[in-house]
Amino acid sequence: MTKKRILTGLVTCGAFGVIAIAAQAGFGGGAGADGVPLVTLPLASASSTKTAVSAVSAVSAVQAQPASLTIAGDGYVYDWTALQAAIAADSEVPSGHFIVGNVASPDYLFSYEKGSFGIDRITPLASASKWFAGTLAMRMKQAGIVTLDDPMRPPLAFWTTSGTKKDVKLKHTLSMTSGFNASPLVGGCQLLPAQTLYACAKSIHDLRYDSLRPGNAPGAQYSYGPHGLQVAAAYLEAKDTSIEPSATPARQRNIHDLFRQHVTVPLGMTNTTWYDPAGSAPTNPWIAGGAFSTPRDYAKLLRAMLQGSFITDMTGFTQQRTAGLPRVFVPASAANWEYALGSFVECDTPSACASSKINSSPGAYGWTGWIDRQTGYYALIATEITTGGDRKGVELEQVMQDLIETAIATRTAAP
Image (cartoon, rainbow, N blue to C red; front, side, top):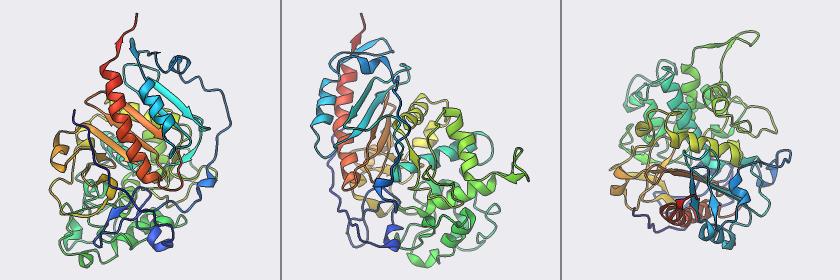
């Protein structure tokens, strides 16, 4: 597999103010029309990270083995010496939790805590949140509630019936091709938690979308940003017409209820929310960058995606949807990659993305999870780097990928 990528550095701009912070939900910088890389972190300070009640984690027998000789539950012996040494030597990542797993083994193939970063530490994900939106949409699709070709109206009753905007579909909002990110410095309602998702989606809808940039019809341009995902979540919430039976009075379920029903409860993700769990659930959560999770929880999602039955249409979920489109605003460290539904399709050049089997969702604090369906593993960099994490997460991921592939290729049958 060709896995050599040239990484483009990012510039961290920390003093944009609220409007500029609304430009990018969490991950990365991007070269906009003026070529200036941008990066945005969530409003909450990284110091607000909560650490769950400490407990001795019975992660797996893997952790009890020397890094040089790991006997995994899939019946193979792996040598992770080079991988652990590379992580330990990286001074830009002072602490983190690093996981490698596959479907065959019930335990992790590799689990390493660097510094003080427990497997149950609750951490802000920034743009690693985006994979949640795509996952929820695909699970609701499996349940027969939505299709990827659903138009926004009638569930979003305010949606226009004229102009190119009328043609926006759910697949466009999830793939950065909706047209709503044409100007990333407009529309910050995703940072107003007391609003409703419906009201925020209407605010984004009313931004005179058709006049912002010529040619931004749905599916015509690739522009990375938070607005499409906020609209997608509002649509999913409005589309679900079931009533929560235990509520008094009975009410339609909100996005948090849907996320629990379709994603976190089935996977046993007990410490994952679309908001800081130290507070209350907002009516307008920041879909593209406001989730929190733990290394243990996020690894459950990655394993389920790799396994292929939790989301049955993995081709539709992971395939590129931005090939050949003009790149209006794209994160610098993903300049050659294409976009799927809430995740990047990784490749050396855009043309190579057609056959790539690697999807990832990096965040601004360095948190980066990915699945490699060709080599057959999932991996996670769980960390919280306040400065430069967007660049560092992707950079370390590339180093780890080569070392993981080597360890898998040279594994031997357990005696």
